[in-house]
Length: 162
View (cartoon, one colour):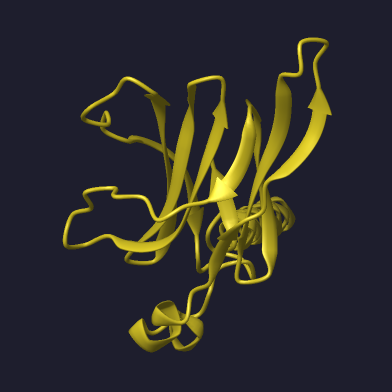
């Protein structure tokens, strides 16, 4: 009888240890809890954020039969390049009146244009993220439309969410 009790207690201890190890391993590997998370002393300060550099890097990649150019639009943020896709037209740097909120800080802007229509892109910093905004424009617009919010780049993790 004592041997059965000892074996039962031993099995319970082994099972409890296994559950404990399993749970602690799950917690260590859960997203946002591992080494990829910034530690509090590594979080960017407001001074670091003010040094954020963003620059659009457009590149003409092709021209259609009717002369219609296609350009790729990329954004370089603090040395890392993010692909934003392709647009019709040729792109160039512009000072764009984006009508930003007080919380938004303009970093860069470009206009992509072909045959009386195109797109404008702006990159703005809002706190610890850079948001890419885009709007379609046309030659006959007397009042430009509002920008549509687009991709967001997290400055702490250097990741982009579309």
